[in-house]
Length: 164
Image 1 (cartoon, rainbow, N blue to C red):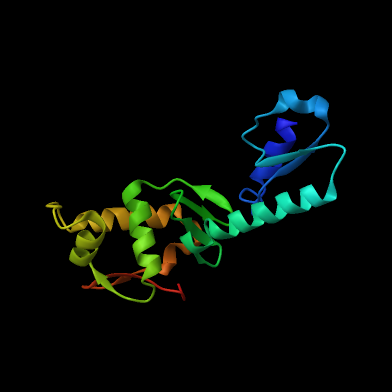
Image 2: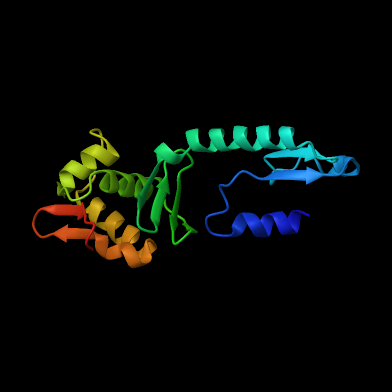
């Protein structure tokens, strides 16, 4: 059962959908299971299943939707520090994630390297402004087809552009 559930969870767009299993009472030994969000035992009570589905949908809507920033097929989940391109997870360092988050929440606006250092690294950071360049280069290489959306504004800084 875990193999099938894991395969379902790995499908793009399905990994965050609440999973409710309908199980025979003899399957009690399969629980708890981290791949299952909730369960109902057979014989199935339609009202109970309906109530559980509704509860899970309400919870899933209140979690995450307001905390996910999307641009086309590029998305970042702020609550869980996850980033995805075309539904596939991408590995970002903490600063890469924060830099992408900042740029995506301020689309179209140009920020100098110094402004990005202050906003993303903090005012107490005393490194070189070229740190931003290095992080931008690494970030671009990780976001694939969206690399051109992080634009260099010559002699000024960077912006996240929707035209890319």
